[in-house]
Image 1 (spheres, rainbow, N blue to C red):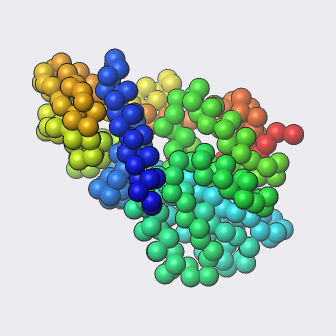
Image 2 (spheres, rainbow, N blue to C red):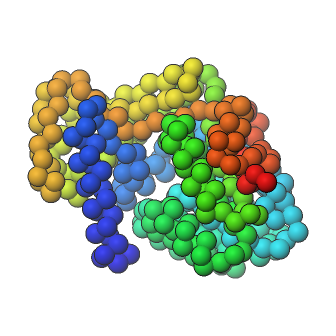
Length: 324
């Protein structure tokens, strides 16, 4: 990454931190959990027994990989597979191996805001799947998608795994899907994971593991502020707290100040005051059912063409196309 692009990312981080911590109630975006340490912590989360999402989606890929690829490219004409927030690519590799095996002409474009994640994934794929055409992209999703749209008219399948859509409340999820719609050609597809509604305790446990890895992951946003913006957050003075509303299907994560305190952030030239038990909202994780997903698609100018679920019906991957 060039120093200019790095500066842009740092500026975006600082701007959003300033906005979130000077608002009431306070908030920070979960996208800033991720740096080299955050990436490692999330890898640990995906291996936790409580975090069912990764295994459920992995099972879907193992069970349905042949039918999934048919839904993408039945005639093997070729396409660009564009993955938003690619991470380590563990699940995607199941499809990539099948693509190579069945000789689909494909270029894989993993996109991630984390340079560390993309560099690691591309290097790993070059070793494991040397025949695969890989072009890693670092940056914000829509900036990269818009660039890819103008580079090629080739069919695209835009893949969003891990229920990343669940980080958005419904109005913003519709905005996100509408923006995806605008960068799609008529025959392009979206392949997206949606975590399904289930026993509330199952959901709570997934985001509040007993070993404390998720708590450390959430607190990493404070560690990043300390490291990158000259903050002096005492991470031990905050606790991770998770709630889930089964009616709306919304799980929320908070960092809660255990005492009255003031935090300095030198690079932003601000002091942030906390009352005892004041919270910072850091993340939402939305859960869905079929009717809700159909409604989101309709509001976004899309429609569901197919869906695939795991054996426990914990999770679903939907294929969307543009409406006629």
